[in-house]
Image 1 (tube, rainbow, N blue to C red):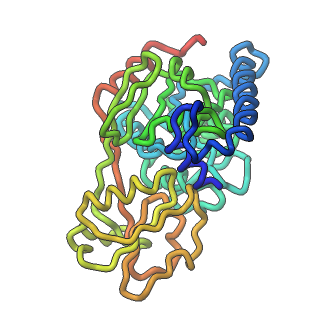
Image 2: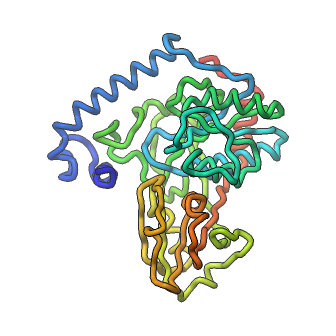
Image 3: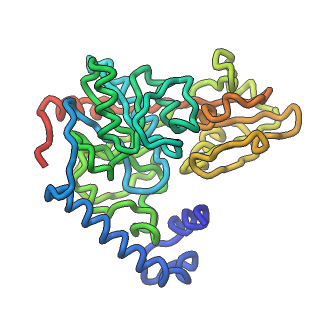
Length: 345
């Protein structure tokens, strides 16, 4: 059902008329969409009016999120921002919900943590960033716990959480990839978590690997992000590296459990590789059987998948690391906003 909906969201545009993918189900989805819109609007108004309490932490908070479902490149952006802010003299920490984790309580994340216990993306963040990472369903509580454990931290980056209004934020960044806003409808008729008008209150919009930029409402500055691929490293042995050229000519299987698996497959194709693609749902809990291919054939995967498969005994599996490349103007904007102090609304 999830895969069908995602495909329908991309294929349909406008409600009258809807494309065939959603036409037959519109009478069911439209009432649910209207209900979702009403609840979302009431909840946001509740925080703005003070009926619901937002928690203000003692350090500035930068939220990196999106208004669409599915990954759009938030995690590599958070990693890049953490590094650029460190170079600017700040001492960031990272908080995240930890999608799919077994507990809701705040918890520290280490490179050795189990993805099943803390989530796949937080383990990747802890491995790559070199800064403190904490997870919790309540990001405000997770942030407070992180600051108590690491009092030197003077800035928090929130990976996802644009709709988590309980955590008061100083800067909001909305991320989009090439899928754009789909048909422009709220869930479940479309992929939007919030209406497009929400973009009128964000501080910046980042397009992740978007070759044909699209217009969005609001006056927030727009920045382009590009994901640069590094050399592959062997699953379970990151010190062993291989270039795309060294894998050329082998029988390759590419697996990707992410919001847009095609983005990973396009990256491999741009490296000149030929492969059989195997898309999986976002945050897929891999089993060894998912990756059992004939002897001598090679598995290629994303870093997010790699942290979940690190304990698998796969003799020829390789992980492709990517690094987000950002324009200096984005970092300058963030530093300027942080210097000017907290938002008042």
